[in-house]
Image 1 (cartoon, rainbow, N blue to C red):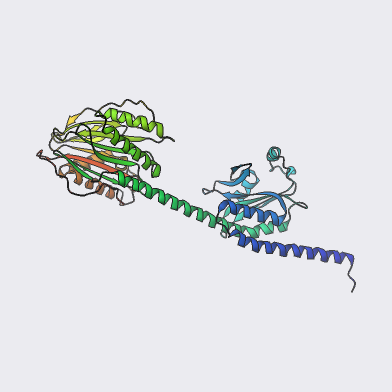
Image 2 (cartoon, helix red, strand yellow; image 1 turned 180 degrees about the vertical axis):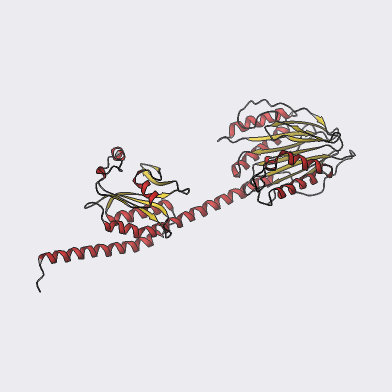
Length: 451
């Protein structure tokens, strides 16, 4: 049987096509193993790009990933010694359009297509001839990334190139999602370590005992964390004058950074309390130091009071903290001790003023708090608020300092329907015995935050 020249050419072409297909299938199998050989996202992108470019014979390419919020795609490229991140909003450019629609775009002549932007070529000196841009879809058909390949050697991109990328897509998507889960797990582990470190700092820096007696006055404090680490702080400390110092503060933000600021503020407070007697001067010194150290808009509020154990005279100053509530037993009214200066850590030389001092009489009380008390939300979104806090305070003030704190905590749990708090809660209550007799603090009772 004689084979014609045309049949021979056809057979040769079919054999060559079959050889290429077998080679690509082998490459696909190898790629499946290679893609799952690493959980490093940057290395994985390189493997995906090398596999796709090598299979279709592209001169250059980029692999984009969908952002977590699904609003853009991004890729990391190396420019000299720097690593740069390219970001494209969905719908912008050819790759952005593919990410948005999930449809492949194949352009045989880039400069004849109005969708192509030649400005990148002008900046880089590269000449784009043909483009193949295809979505990377997972098994559910969700777009998780985009292949963008340029300049197929031997001519424009073909149908078989599209088919190969479609086959590679599922393997690439699975590897990408595995790498992202691994990265998320590492980040979660890092955050957990940070939170534990911050909580450790707080436990070490809060008062050893949650209660303290000073003449006829009893002081009690509590600090409970939300799901993150706290920037809240309270303290009982001895002053050079022989008075008992009481402080409550709130650092902006949460986490280890806030805890470190709190630790610094506590150290400064205790150190300067041994050297100065006037509370405004104490705030001046703390502020000047924090203003040099704090960055990124971080700041701290701080209320400081001094209680004389012999006369029950109370002096105070406040750097932008929530108003302290003062209950006057003789009239049954509640007054507010407002700020005497701005928050700490923004501007040096703030020149804090002193609040008007007063004497705590039998049955009088004080309540110091952070905004975790007033801003606790009910399921319908309504906040606990100042009026509710005052009402609970007045209703339980004659039961003692610890009872006041327990009543507020119970009211907040009921108000929020037992949902986890979204902010830290720190409270300090100061109550004076109704007969003026000396108060006695219970033994034990740590000041560590509740877990």
